[in-house]
Length: 391
Ligand SMILES: Nc1ncnc2c1ncn2[C@@H]1O[C@H](COP(=O)(O)OP(=O)(O)O)[C@@H](O)[C@H]1O
Ligand SMILES: [Mg+2]
Image 1 (tube, rainbow, N blue to C red):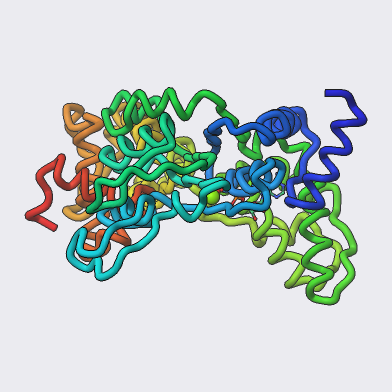
Image 2 (cartoon, rainbow, N blue to C red):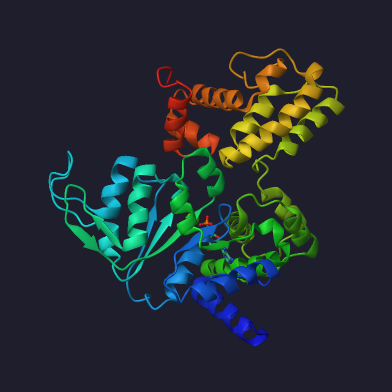
């Protein structure tokens, strides 16, 4: 793409869809967006939470010939498994208990437009089969009916999961994966494009200031430097929230590094190193390792289970080196043990689940949130580990 066209496209995306960025990584994603938007191709958007999957999906629809037809966004992780199919494909009266009247599904409502299947990694296998059929033939049936319905719907799917991994785990169908993955748009995490941070700060600060009737007086260089060194696990969403807080609290006053430090979330999602930093800090001060702290840090991991596994592997390795420093385990905080044989990942996962459920008095919803997995995934794991009778 030539420079002029790129900058015109960047302006359009900013004005219409609030997509900001001039880093090579975001430009690459925008270029892909512009290429696929006018086609009917299925697009898979991946990226960590807050990287812009929603805004990109909307922009793809908005820049396509379907823009006047509906854009329907379905969060596959938020709709209970039993309802998802009837929401997507509709049902006839009496198709199941509670189906008191006939209902059109999203695919019928979106005819001529686009369906955005968010959190596709959460879609149950049975529904995946039906989705694959729609992708291949445009056809499906309502629940409780044999009449084949044909629609013209473009599909955009998004996930923050590693679908290739899910395929290996057997929780995502390989055929559907290949079908979706034909056009893959990956959105980079914010920490990989720190050069966009000043632009984003300016954009959101000016917007909020306007909204609250203040004048935005800018940001100190060292404050920007702090922002550019932050790891932004919540990506643009986290940055946007921070900027909105700072500008609102200071009523547009110039932002200093101290302001930033004060409000930058300290309970940021932990990386394996964070727990270890906590540990070595405690060591330096001659205190015993605070096992509960490490454990809470782990519990607050909102990353996917795969990230948890990687973190645990690193921790386990370090922990085994540091075993002598670990105080006797407490019953409830029984995540780590002295026994090196207990560092099996599945065993760790089981224990984290038990610990989370105990901590939240058996509330699956809170436990799932703390573990960074969906309730549905937690149910599945409870079965996998034969924990259903316990909780
Ligand atoms: N490139 C971007 N430029 C400006 N704002 C963005 C960008 N990407 C994301 N955002 C903002 O960040 C927030 C999260 O974006 P969203 O699309 O919901 O992320 P995701 O769906 O990946 O979690 C939204 O407020 C969105 O407007
Ligand atoms: Mg989203």
